[in-house]
Image (cartoon, rainbow, N blue to C red; front, side, top):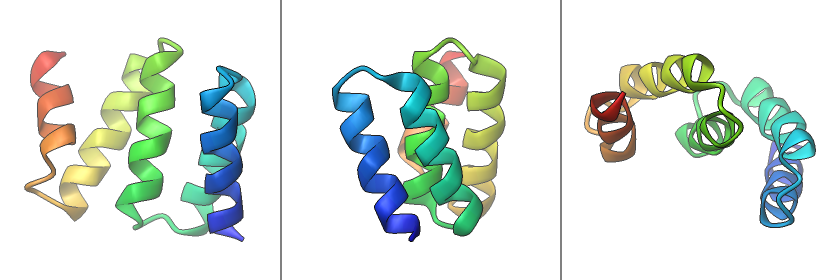
Length: 79
């Protein structure tokens, strides 16, 4: 079920429907809270819609799971 939410989130992101993308990225991340792929998707959309505090928190969570995650490191350095 998490994978289905992720796929829907990716489709909505491509369509620039970020509200629905957030719903589905959030659902996927909630179902699998230690899956960094799902967390990265959620962080990207949070950042895209201007929720930088939420994006930062998610990227910090990703770093706790994967200390060498380059995207998370890069985002947090840039903020």
